[in-house]
Image 1 (spheres, one colour):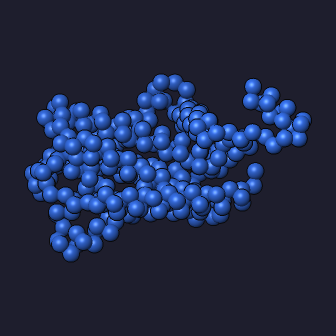
Image 2 (cartoon, helix red, strand yellow; image 1 turned 60 degrees about the horizontal axis):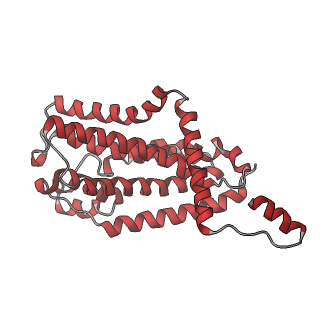
Image 3 (cartoon, rainbow, N blue to C red; image 1 turned 135 degrees about the vertical axis):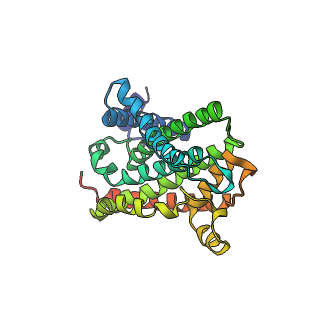
Length: 275
C-alpha cells in the first residue's frame, strides 16, 4: 500500500512520504534479525548441531581452562574456587576476543549485502556481535547453573554479572567498529588484531583480581576499562567474599566514546567502499 502511495505521489510530482521513526526502527530490527540468521547459517551450517556449536565452543574452552587449574590445585587468594574463578574470567575474555578478532573480515565477507538499500554496515556489525554475545552469555548461564547445583555457589548478584557482560559486549562492539573501519583501508588490522588480543590478555583483568596487586599497581590497572568489567562480573558472582573495585561511570564513558567513534568511522569508510 505504501509503495502504491509513493508511486502515485511521484506521478503527481509530490515528494515521497518519509517513514516514521517507529516504522524505520521496526524495519531495521527486521534487517538485523535476518542478518543474524544469515550469519548463523554461514558460520555453523543449517543443521541443529552446527547451531549448538555456537554455545559449545566458549563452554568447552572455558571449562577446559577451569578444570586445568582445578586439577593442578593452585590456591587462590581469598579462598576462591579455582574452577569458577577461571571460567568466569575466561568467558568474558572469549567474548572480547571473538568480537574484535572477527571485525576485520566483517565488511569484506558481507560487502555484497550493501547493494540492498536498507542494509547498512552498522547493521552487519550489530548482527555479528549480537550473535557472539548470545553465545557467550548462554555459556556463562550454563556454567553458573552448574556451579550452583554442583558446588552450591550461586551468584550473589546476577544482575551485576549480566550488566558486566553487557558492558563487555558494548565495549567489544565499539572496538570492533574501529577495527572494521581500519581494515577497509589497510590489511594491517587483519594481520595484527589476533596478536594484539593475545598480548593484551595479561592486562585485561581476566585472570587476576585487583586486591591481589600492590596499591600502586591497582591504581595503574584501574585505567584499563576491562579491569572494571571483570571486577563487576566477579562482584556479582562472589559478592563480599572478596573485595572489588570498579567505576560504572568510567565503563559507560569508554563504551560511549568507542561506539560513537566507531560509528563515525564506519560512516566515513562506507563512502570509500568499492561495490
